[in-house]
Image 1 (spheres, rainbow, N blue to C red):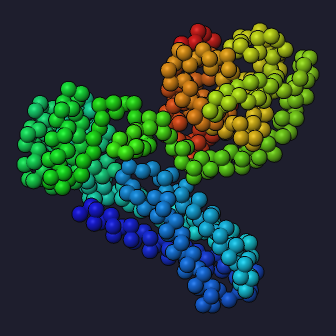
Image 2: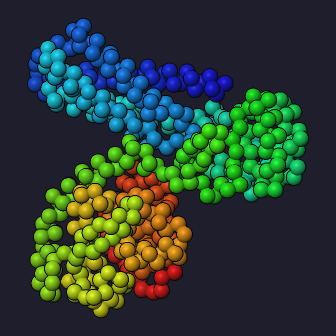
Image 3: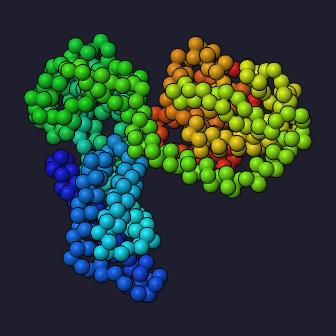
Length: 464
């Protein structure tokens, strides 16, 4: 039933997205030519124009489909729909502009085209978000549920049951479990492993979730065979579950399947492009707005002590490439700048340097590193090569941070881990950020940085 409903929902989504896109053009034209100018000088009801717009609507929904916008929403975040919609609309709007330019018989203003992009994006995204909220509501109310049977009764099964209970909006209902051992916290025990076939026949189960302990893995083949025989979908929680990232990539060589444990959302070219565009726009805007602050800071640094205005230091960036990171100099020129670990009571700081470090103004030149593509607005903070060489020996996962561009601010920093704090905890938070990246998370970190994150509470103590 769920599969059948999903097909109808996808068809309805396709048609409604096409209709909203079609209407968006007429709304855009009404705003541009009627509301703004008071004269409608273009015949938007001509057969040629209607044909072009109809083809555009068909192309855009096919593009949405190719970008997985219509995939089931239970496991997916809202960002997995919003970003592809914005990207597809941008590409197709540019293509439409090129078509209008080539045929020349329809003269459309650039303002109308921009309005069309904005309105169509807002309407389609709004519809998808509304659909998501509606599905969350009806699932919380006990409808559109996916009925689950768990095979297993150990720690993995209990963890899965807790996660399902914590996310009722996803619409999963655990009807019970099968196991040779009782586990009251999982609900109703419907039989042992040998009775799986009978249980599946007697209950309307949509999916079997296999959550076996290591010593039970010999049962795996039989359980999968039984579920396939009864036509029930199967999902497996592997015993090495804690090592698998939230969005793993699975590759194949012949009959061998490989799980890429290093996969992350930014491996997706669309998501990486969106993040980079945000970096460019954000850094340009920040440079323009903060240029008076940077000019005043440069004068202050020059007057505070002899030496250059900027402190240029080698840092390790994405894919372990070395780059020159810029900061306003906050210390007297010294011979420990490439190895010394800065702490709150560091005697090398100047009086003005303490102020700009306290307020993080010393970090502002890194906006130019962001613009150059060496850094990102948000990401793991970059370290100097001297420390990276030591940390990678102490913390096995340390170099996984280098999969993405380092950031001016990051998830670890807004959670209080900056300066002389636990490296292990900073790495844990950085890896969580990389594995769970989405545009909303970047915006959240930037907002937390703007409202309180600029104050640098450097901690004194021994690194853990």
